[in-house]
Image 1 (spheres, rainbow, N blue to C red):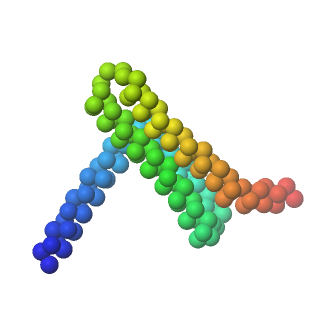
Image 2 (image 1 turned 90 degrees about the horizontal axis):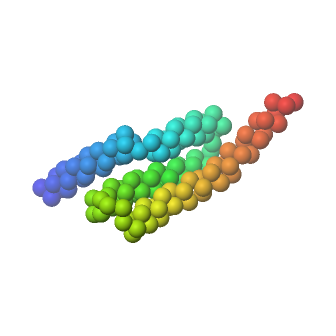
Image 3 (image 1 turned 60 degrees about the horizontal axis):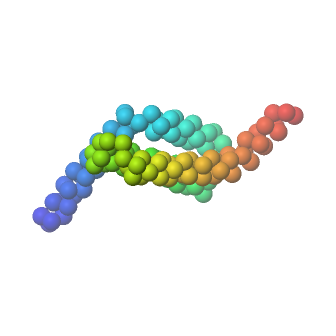
Length: 130
């Protein structure tokens, strides 16, 4: 029983550290705040368009991939700055590659968003035109 309590307390502490990290990233990273604004808009649109469970799961997985990519990019940038404060070509390359990962996730999310929202929005547009 003692091990279970210790494990739960450890998990709670880990969640606290993770939440602080996410909060730091939100406050320090403009791009993450932009992503979160799109998240809010996408989720609101999904509710309005009455997404079924499968479409909602795909949307949440897509959102998660972009947010995770941005968080990893942020962590890598801070770690690289700590390791090498000067402008080192390898540090620049590492940061560029991590930013490229975010760009790939965002591009994929745009494509998935078009596939998920496109048919509903197209039908809504057609019904408004008469």
